[in-house]
Length: 453
Image (tube, rainbow, N blue to C red):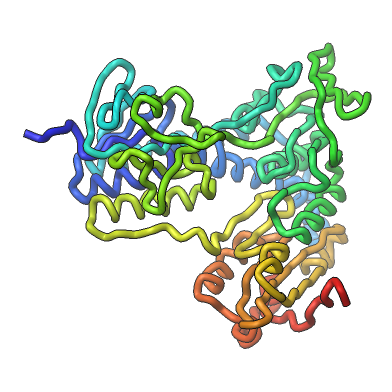
């Protein structure tokens, strides 16, 4: 008789947890996954997927305008926010069903309810107890807000995806990718949007030219950015909300959204009882094999606060399942991970920023800014920015960055080149596809002068 009820119990049915558990089940392990909400997690239900559906919907506003430059005479257009939300929710229901079927097809038992660790091998789910040889923590993250007067009046990105009606105006606090993405959505759909950020520019941690280029484009679209500004208090008033900011200035707005970061969702799941160590932010501490301070307990995804991206969590889940249940040890590499910001226009980036690369030694920088061909007829004042960072000693390309239409689609391919260690000479030897914006990455020949020159 087996010593434990399962070989693996996973806490959290998001992208990483589902990948790890269904692969383990496919390899013959007796598996279960506990989920207190819906199967799919942040990306499928509260993040990447629904947000991008709204971005597609919002972009039609400019597409209708631009169509006139290409000979079209579109009729009167009217936008229906509830219809978009309903269509989005229908798609999420479909995806949730697919995730549930994938788990069933791999013999994974779904345990509905909040899971809490009772000890290193025991999990309690809504009063029921189950044991497992191995436990995987994949509980993700959750929006974090500061403790200021009136914070109870704000919404997060979770609620922004479910608003019953479109606001006429809104203040978004935060300058990260979630903030700028939602700013683009609501601005394109007609809301008057103000971004409030504590730092001097948006997208902290991104390349400086990316930050500047996107800030310029957001400004052109009418998004107001208040830099080096903090919110002191928020009050409900008859026509919306009053937001008091640095100094004595007061902003009146219809809605306040906070996108100031996410915190590992580890409170109240029994980590202390099981002996699992966390850091000061509540992130689960793990080694290179995703093993926690307890030998049989592992963790992956946003609750470890390493690289909080859905494809990373999925890759970590695969590495865990291969290592623990298929005799194929895999360690996750966190170098050259492509990422995107689905702002308007979008950002695509892979590799090092100029600042990071310069800290390692001399670099050559190639930079190009131009109007995309689409807008030669529309007259829209939108610019593309592309940037290559090259290690001078080896000619190896260390970073590729782009702000502009199709940036994420283009940079995904460049990610392969960087993983393969491509050099600038190999970029130069590659024939471009004409006419495309992407060809600029293989035709840039002029180095930007060093700052000291």
